[in-house]
Length: 170
Image (tube, rainbow, N blue to C red):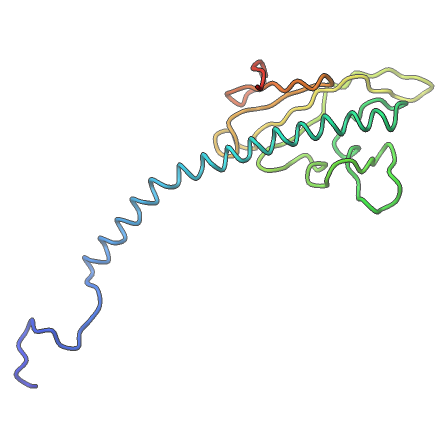
């Protein structure tokens, strides 16, 4: 055994440094190609969730208006929410929507009820209109488009994520 020459395969095994660097380079190239595609799928999922949430909120506003006609529409997200099982629903906690949506943030979007038109009848504010917006937390990372609707239920969007919701969602 003493006469083993250099270069003969003995009990040595494993990868050389060059081989490991080549494998790591190939993995990095594949990741560079895969991450943008994953990001687009994630953004599309967030936007789909935001549209679904807006439809649920419009429905919840209709249910709130029917349940509490003296109050009209709700003018804040927590009013539509409330812990289920914590007692009977009230106009201040109607228990119509889930807690995550009532918090105003879900799937990379922030939801806001604003611009509520009201009438005061017998010292009670009755909201007759509202505007609902869903804005990406980070435009280009959690979503591309901002969505808007009102008491009429037509969903519009701003393709640039800004505040000008002019395009009708088909």
